[in-house]
Every structure is written in C-alpha cells, then in structure tokens.
Amino acid sequence: MSRILVFANQEGDVLSSGAKEALAFGSRLASTTGGEVRSITLGPFAEAGAKEAIASGASIAYTITNPLLAEYDIELFVNSIHTVFEQSGAEILILSFDKIGKDLVGRLAARNGASAITEVVDYTANSDKISWIRPIYGDKAFGEYTTTREKVVVGIRKKSQDVNVPDETNKGEIIEVDYAPSEEMIVSKLVVKIQAALSDIRLEDARIIIAGGRGLGGSEGFTDLQVLANVLGGTVGASRAACDAGWVPSNLQVGQTGAVVAPDLYIAVGISGASQHLAGITNAKSVVAINTDPEAPIFKRANIGVIADYKTVIQALTEKLKKVLV
Amino acid sequence: MHIVVCLKQVLDPEITPKYFKIDPETNRPDNSDSDLVLDSFAENALELAIQLRDKVPGATVTALCLGDDQSEEVLKRALAFTANAAVRVWDEDWEDLDGQAVGHILAQTIKSLGGAQLVLTGYQASDIEEGLVGPVMAEELGIPCVTLVSDLEVEENRAKATVEVEGGYAVVSVPSPAVFTIISSESNVPRLPKVKDIRLARSKPIVLLESEDLNLDTERCQPGVKLERAYVLNREVACDVLPGEDGAELADKLAERLLALKIL
Image 1 (tube, rainbow over the protein chains, first blue to last red):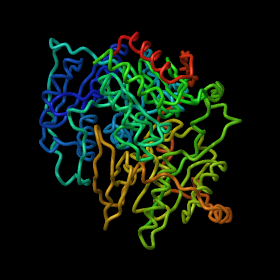
Image 2 (image 1 turned 120 degrees about the vertical axis):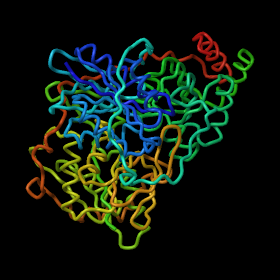
Image 3 (image 1 turned 90 degrees about the vertical axis):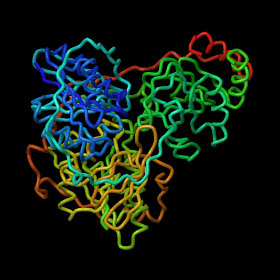
Image 4 (image 1 turned 90 degrees about the horizontal axis):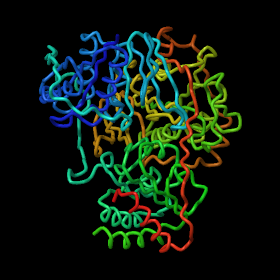
C-alpha cells in the first residue's frame, strides 16, 4: 500500500503535459503497489484540473482555489503543496520535473524531511520496496535508487511517460483544502515575461524538428532550416552551442537544458551530438543527421546519416520536397 | 558584497559512450582513463560570479567545492578565473552523498563563511543530474532560490535574474541574499584564463574545511537516496549512412527516404 499524491500543474484551466505524465506515472505505480492516487491542483481553475485528474485516475482531488495562486509563484506553491502533502498523509509526492518542478522538488523535500529523486522515468516495485529508475551520466547509464526516508518527493522526467486516456466515468471526490496563502509570502517580483506566440509550434509538441548546431557557422544557416521547416510543417530547434553563440534565441534550444523533445522526425544539421543534446532527443522516433564529420557522436543516435556540407544538401532537399509536398 | 559560487568536479560528460563503463562492484563509472572536469554549468556560474564581482566595487568571490583532494583542480581553475578565495569542504566519511546532503553541507559551509549575498551554482551537474543542490541550499538557508538563470544583475538589496520559463523567458527580481542556479547563455561563456592568472593561481591557498569545522546535522548529512544498481545503456542505433558525396544527389536520396517514413 502506498499513498501517492500528484501535484498537477495547469496551463490556464487544463492540466499541463507534465501533469498528465505525473498522473499517468502515479496511476501506474498505484496499480502495482495496491495504493491510491490523490491529486492537488492550485488556483482559480483548480476544480477543472481536479476533474481532469479524477478522469486520469485520482480518487481524491485536493484543490486550493485561492486567486493568489492564479500565476505561479514559488513560495506560494511550495507552501500550498507542502501543506497538502502533510495533511494528506501521503508517502509519495509525484510531480513533473519540468521548469516549475525544478524549483519545487528540492524545496519540498528539504522542508518535509523527505527523500528527493529527480528525472525519474520508471520504477520497479515489490511488496515493500520501490526502486526508482532514472538515467545518469548524460543518459549513458541507468541507475536504480531506493530511498532512506519515510517520504519521498519524485520528479518525473519530461516526455518520459505515455499519458492516460481520460475516462470521464471515473468517480472521485474533490476536497477544497482550508489553506490561505498570503501575499506576504511572495518574495520574487516578475519584471517581464516574454513568451513565444501561441501560433508558434512549441518544440515540445512538434512532430517534426529541424535543428541546427555549431556546424551552421552562423545565424544565416538557420534561415535555410526555417524554409525547410515551413515546407515540412515543422519547427526549428538548435543546439546549446548555437544558442550560446547568439545565432538563435535560447528558447529554441533542444537538450537537457532547453526543450526535451519527442518528435516523429528530428533532423540534426551540423550538430555533433553532445551528450546533453542527445539526452534531449532520447524519445525522438526517427533521427536524421547531416554533418561533415563522420566521427560525430550524432551518427551513433541517427537512423539515417548524410555525410556532407549541409549547404549543399538542405536547399536541394527543400526544393525536392517542395515539389512533392506543397 | 560576497558572492559564493559552488563548483562540482564531474567525469568529462563528452567521454565516448563506447568507452563508458560502470564498475558493478561500486556502481560507479570505471573511469581510470578519463578526465575529471569542472561541470559546465558550474563553470558558467563561475564566469557569471566573476563578471558580477567586477561590476561591484569591493565585491569578492569565494569558490566552494565539496570533494576529495582531486577536486582542488576545479578550485585552481576558479582562482585562475580570478576568484578571490577558494574553499574545499570534505570528510572521508562522505562517500555516497546525494544532492540533499550536499545542499545541507554547502549551506552550513556558507554560514560558516559569514554568509553571502549571492549564492551561485550550476543548475544540474552533468553526472547525476539531480538538480537539487540549489533549491535545497536555499531552503536550508531560508532564502529564495531562482532556478534556470541565464543572467543576473545586482541592484540595491535585490538581484534581477533572467530565467527560462515554459515557452519563453522571464525577468524576476528577488531580495538578496538568494540562491541562483545557472544555465549557459551568450553572456556567461567561460573565459580563457590568462597565463599570468593561471600562474598566480598555483600559489594561492585553498582553505580546507572538515565536518568538525561546521555545524552539521548528522541526519541531514545522510543521503536520502541510495544507488542500488547502475548499468550502461546501449543506445547506439545502426545508422544508415547514405552513399555518395554530391550534395544534390544525397538530397534526392534523403528526400526519398524521408517520404518513405510516411511522416511528412
């Protein structure tokens, strides 16, 4: 028996993709251990989130519908989730190790005296012991961890879980928790927030990604990639090296920092394949590498390789596909 | 203004996967032939710390590293970056610390150094990639933590951080002292230390602190997780390299292959 609490973050009134993964992981774990899943959603749309969580397997859905929780604030969220974690009597708190999760896991575990384990992708469980499985050393190895404390906070690696198909007939109870976070708790002030336009395809959600790296030699090469992306209905990504060089904005970065992606097709152009980049494309279905260096590590991950200067290939490829597809 | 930057020495993450082995006895990499390096995000944090110091008159940077004597290399590197002081904290009993235990020890070390207005650390080291030390230190020190920071600006009693958020980035202002976990960006690309600074660094002292020098909680120095088993993962894919050298010809072949995938 294990009592599992899942923090399900929302984007507007719907659960985030990370939240859906955390709920799927929690439900799967509960079915193995004979436990139950409860959820916690925060903010004015918490009830809509709670209903979604119940459809994804939660039997009790805690909500704190306080309007202060409309926008993410680390202190308010840590205090709120900590309160529910304590009150629920749960032993396992699961959340997505997305950008918000990276703020929360360590703080919640330290505050609760719980163990913390992050980037978890799987588990093995027998009657009284759960081992948490996660990649280590830039995805070169897997580690199986047990925990030493009564409670544990678990961060689930993004894009590592198949999400549940929601079942609207699931029954569950929604409990509004009597907890009022206050404005005095807030310490950080938002100065400005710059987000990609809604019309842009988010890297995380993209089916087709054309990504460029150091081999492009400058920002001009990305224009060629963008033209190809437009023809394919895909979006452009970049390696850390290309972002750090200032050729493209950092929100295009694919890798462990930046976006962890799982497209059907990933075309890596002039990307050598540093381990932190490869860790971001673990779940890409087909990978094509175009690179002048046949020894580049990207060819160890790619299904199809082209050893050539990208300039001679990309434009010709774009023309060719334009004729067929457009 | 006192800036503490926490550094970690890691196995070179770019080691070729086929040479990467795990010793089944210790569950650790069998890395006798490979290099230990300063973690790359920690190096970005170090660069940023030095840049901030140079903008604020009278500011100092202390480089802090938890590790055995081998890890003095990363502190020497920090001194070559012109860090003002270097502190290594170590105890032979600390074998299998996790991010939480390290966070506790570093927080107590920072207290014993008289505190800091800014605590910088890499956001996630490339070996175990827990991403816990920064947030745990902040919780232990009772100060804010901002994660995924690409740039920092110091203001009167506050700091303004550029942070990565879902779908974009934001600038947030937090009161100092605070902890910041740093990612790479255009503005914190590590410098190449000057030969003169490398030479000077060799003669600068590295202060060693041990557990009895610190006010540690025995319980919190115990790791919360235990690595039971580690095994190498073979992700190598048989890459089908398209034959030929002519770009247009290769593009034709590639187009055919892509269309055959039935994704487009």
